[in-house]
Image (cartoon, rainbow, N blue to C red; front, side):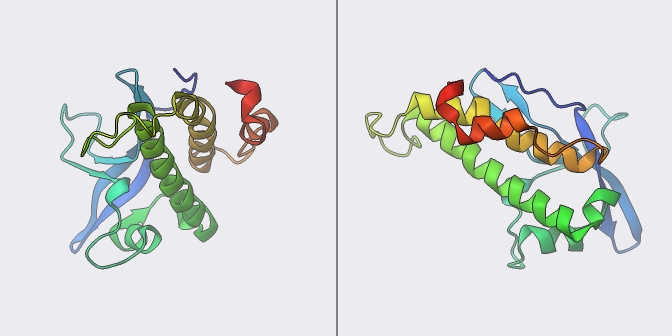
Length: 173
């Protein structure tokens, strides 16, 4: 479907904060197109590499916790964040982009299926063209911007072609 491919599969996110000092190293998994119909995205995984199964996985889609904190405050409280995310502007940007990606990912899946599978709507809200645009144009541009937070700053956040695709989506469907 999409030609998006992250530069790395995972990026160091920080250390899980423990009461007895630094906890496990935590990595964010970058988006991957899975099973030909959806994006996997937003997993925070500890102890990857040496272990065939991660010790802990959490999904950023669930980061509104019982403490009633926003993602920004929760991440600051729960992690000793990596250098790029210690910058408040980068962390706010990361949170906004992540929530936007999660929302758009869910919308693309809904448009593709035509319902949430809770009740049959006979495909009344199915919109394959919009699903394709979200999956091929909008989400990859946002994924690129998220990834740019974790890589060197000498590269632009969004290139001009990606911005043009967002502004003029009909040219790219």
